[in-house]
Image (cartoon, rainbow, N blue to C red; front, side):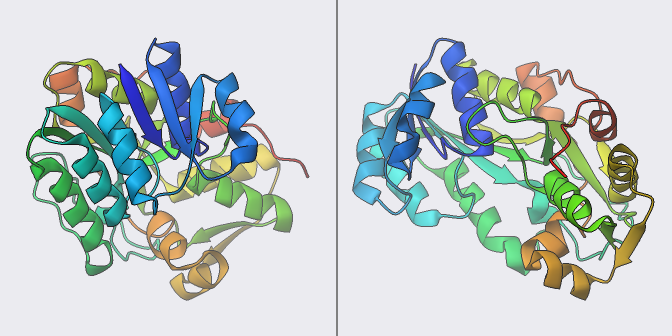
Length: 300
C-alpha cells in the first residue's frame, strides 16, 4: 500500500511510519526539516518536505496515495480539508490521530471522575476541546473515503522514529530530574487510560489493512493514576520529595493544555471496538510497570 503520513519526524508519526514500512508498505512522510531527510530514509520513510499549511502539497500527496495517516496536529482543520479533497471520493483511507484529552475534565488532580467512556458512550466534551471533536466528526462523515479516527490515550514507550519521547511522562521525568522534586497536579488521584506505543503501531496497521475498516476507535491497555505514575518515577529517579501543585501553579509551570488537561484531568476510556472488530490485543504491561522496569533514565 502507498501511504502518506504526516508528522513523520514526530514521536507517533515516526514510529508508525517505521512500523508500516517494516510491514512492507511504501511510506512517504511529511517533514518540515530537510536536514532530517537522510534519517527518515534510514527508517524506511521517503521524506516530503513541507508543512500542514501547504494545502496544494497535501492534496497532491493524498491523490497519489492509497491511504493517508495524519500523525501531526489533531486540530489543524485546513490540513484535513486539503487531505480529504486530495483523496477524492474513491474509497481511500484517511486515518486521523486524535487524543482522549477531549473528554478530559478540569479536576486539577484532586477528583477521581467515575465516568468511563467507550466508543458507544456519548462523549462529554468541554468547550476548549470542542473543535477537536468536530474535526473527528468531519473525518468520519466525509463522503467517498474510509474515515477512521484513532483516539489515543496517554502513550508511553520509547519512540522508534526520530523522536524518542512522548509528552506526559517525559515532562514529569524531565522536571523532576532538573529540580530534584517530583511535581504533580493536585493530589494526583486523577486517572488516565494509557497505551504503549508498540500497541498503537499495531492498531494503526490493523486499521489500514483490514478491509472496510472505518469509524472511531479508542486506544488503551489499562489506566493509571498520576499519583501512581509519579511515585514510580520518583522511585526510579531516587527522589524522595513529591510536591502537589495547584492548577494555577501547574499551568504556570507547564502551560494551560499540559497543566489542566494532560496532567490534571481524568481521561478514562475503554477501547472496546478495536478489540471487538479488529482483533487488536495490546501486549504490553501497565505504564507504572514500564516506568519501573523499562523507562530510560535521562542524563542528570
